[in-house]
Length: 361
Image (tube, rainbow, N blue to C red; front, top):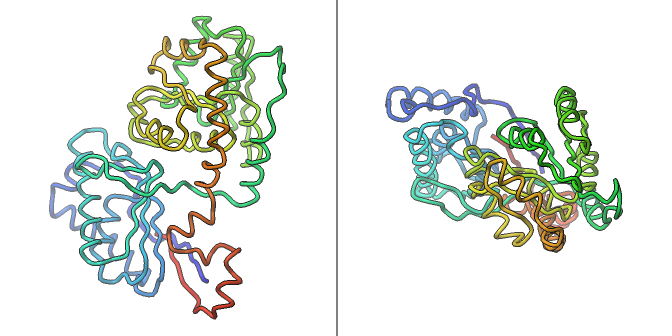
């Protein structure tokens, strides 16, 4: 098996899009032509497997224009909502139509194409379309580490018996940082709760601000590798995913499956439909939904301990399934690259299979 990762695109797939990128034929053709030239550089016909882990709208359209060149399996990750590229509804609708049209053209060209998402559904312009669920995978050592952490319950009575509620990731308004700060300013953090905040390095000023507002703050801002990040999450009782639904309404958060892999219950904001639908499907009962305002956050944090205990039990029960969804073997098997999993090497040798080739775009 030979795999290559090639940075070939000159057109930034994350760049914002405007309605004229789709409504102006001359502009659309010109941009797609540039992307097609980059795709030609990959010599698409020589690959058994082509992975597009994150679909960019114009790049997928260009790839559909090259459908006749594809001979292997194509796997496309529908990981980002239209709001990632545009704020206005007209452009978002055009983006959804463009992605749906590209997938239809690939199907019409009889390309072996798999379109997947992290949530099990994606809006392609005519409502939510079901998709296979495929989460970013982790290695087998990380799988084992997560299982060990999930099996080890946090020591009872630590820090005076307080319940530890954790915030992880970037400290910004999209993830509800403003509501947390307001809660602390209003002195509404219950005395029996310790707020654990783990953010990337370089944000010491956040810790200084929060520690003035409440005594029961455990703050740290530093670089953490994957193992240290998981260990920190294992040390809390509840994980906050109380994010702004204007941003996360149809967007998944990587924090959610990671918390569930460790058996941690979640606090989610009402309106974060992609997250809620995912949790209802794979970990029912493992989370609490609260309105996205300070009163909603405060009410959720003052729920009886028994309510959170029940959520924790459901989260722990869902942990093995969630870890299986993040299995490298499962990921590679679904995208058609099972040979790349080191455990399958002996099978390829025994069958004398010809080397397979994969590329990522």
